[in-house]
Amino acid sequence: MDCAGIDELLSEYIDGTLDSKTVQMVEKHISVCVDCKKKLASLRAMVEELNALEPMKAPADFLEKIHQRMEPRSDFSRLFKKLFVPFKIKIPLQLAAAATASILVVMVLNLQKSEYQKTQPLKASKSERFAEKSKSDHLTYEFSTKTRSSAPIIEEAPERLSDSKQRMSAQKTPVQPSIQREDGPPSSVLAKARPSTGKAQPIKLAMILKPVAVVGAYPPDITMHTMPLTEGNKKTIEQERTDKDTLGRKFEAGQKNQIDDVLLRMNHIIWPLKGKILTKEYNKRKNRLTSIQVQIPAESYVSFCRELTRLGTLKTPPPALSNQHLEAVKLLINFAYPE
Amino acid sequence: MNNHIKKASGLSRADTVLIRAVQAGDMAAFDELVLKHKDRLFNLVYWFLGNYQDANDCAQETFIKVFKSIKKFRLESAFSTWLYRIAINTCKNRIKSSAYKWGKKTVSLETVNSSKNGNPFSEIVNGSPTPVMALEKKERMMRIQKAINSLPEEQNRVVVLRDIQGLSYQNISDITGLNLGTVKSKLARGRLALKNQLKGRI
Image (cartoon, rainbow over all chains, first blue to last red; front, top):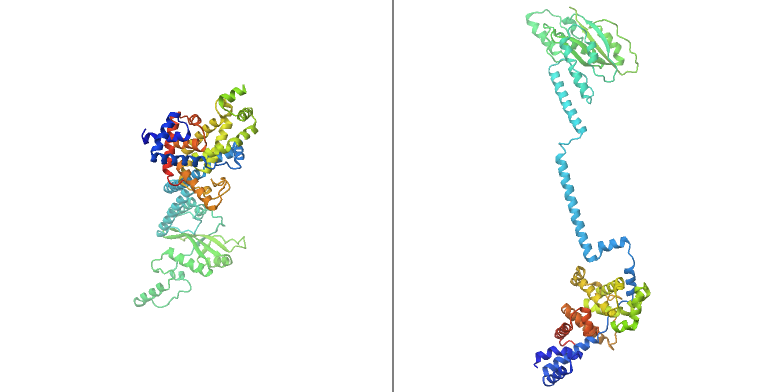
């Protein structure tokens, strides 16, 4: 038998499991073959080394650990093991999953936010729509107010802006009577049209204006020059009158603009008493002032009434003030003109 | 009857008694069975896996499997044969598991540190007269362990069962399920491979 065949038998020869005939054959070969003899020696040394290895022993708590593992586990520990054991694998995976989930949540929230912002103008809330409507009403109101002031039919005192509907009705109603109403006193109409502001109703006065006299119409602070009216000095006199017109308007004595005349005289009564004109109503066709609403400090009420008699005759005597604690008094004066 | 079983299956009387007691629900008998076989089983599993912690875990799991299925054990073979068969299957499953593969790629701190149960060689009785000889012995152990673990699976099993555990060819055949001829050839090839790997180092 050659060396290759002997190699395959060396393992069993060491273990002593070969039959006697094969053992003799191997021993015969080894006795003449130095290489196979060395191979056998090294193999036998290795096997003896393995056989001589110190046996590994189980740890002292081996049985205890088995008992622990055999104890019926609670649901929590079972779930814990299922979720986290082995730690080296499951925890990194779970951290990665948590990070991915967080990123997804942030992305979804951002998407929803952008979608919400896109749909926000379309889905405006009821209050916002109302606010928009109020804003448009306000603009309409301002526009109509400007329109009215550019064609001055009536001017109103500032009112509450929040009640847009009332404003709308208030702005429309008083305008129409000023055009239609020629005969009847406007006080009743005004009283109905005036929005309820919660304030005290104005004191109504009716007076017949004195016939407009150019000279008498001038307030006391206007200097009258008594000089012969000649062609030479006519322009000079008129120039002086114009310069001293406190309304800043050109006052032409010959034209007798009754509206400006009455207003001018009323202003000369009101301003020194620190009052103010609130509203005015005109009859455009007859170019007359039909009524005026003024506000006078309460302490000046008597003075105002006394001054008022200089302009005309009051139909009824002015009533006494019922509330002595008022700071200001509103008066609605209706004018009648002698035919 | 008992004598007939002992002759037929090769069981020691103690193992037979203990197994019957466990089958009857005696936990103390199971503990005795564990204490009797734990070191040999642990040694076997350790040389299969090459890792102390994995060996400990697998050996415990093997005994738990034995306890769970001992009522099915009909005493037709040696308890150690049945025990080692279960251990080999448990080790196979462990080697296939991702945890074992992960552990092979990383260095276990428990192995590096010389803790009570962490050092695989801590349990070895140091009979060397000098520290140098003790160090040489440890190094030789590590080289052998590395060489055995580098063998193909079946060669590794056969070499460990024969040269470390000292089992007969027939027992190895019973445990592994390989026929006698295959066991012999696997053993011869495994020994040659080991000799070549450890050439000049032993």
